[in-house]
Image (tube, rainbow, N blue to C red):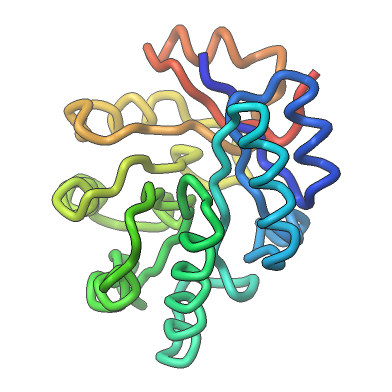
Length: 205
């Protein structure tokens, strides 16, 4: 089982790894859903985690609020993704949408142009997409490795039924990572029901 833990800084990453985290998602400002962390936090966390053979995924999100970004914000995201790849992160987690609740493929393709090899993860912006089967096919075709999803609104419990649909749509060609409001005591049951081997949590015991 891969237990990915969302953390807000280097210190939290160290604590999570010592408690058994198999993968880290590094953020800043988890209170607003996670933002791009500082380059120093990224570098320090990667150095510690890699010494323990723990992969690090870095969130790329320039601000809180919607996942609809201006041209200037896309340039920020593009610069951050390249910097994070150069720092040696194992993956980046990001999500960009249009005002019609679809993946903003034009912006994403701009961001990924000339990006050094790195794992691509689409974040929980996925839960706001109207046509999710079509979105999954685009992500597969564009070499995304994983989708992070709650199966619906974070204001409601994990939507197991919809997660099962998402897994079916994926045809196991892209990883599905359940996330959001998952207590450590429910991890095993959720993975068993969904027939998955990985999950994302915000704390670990």
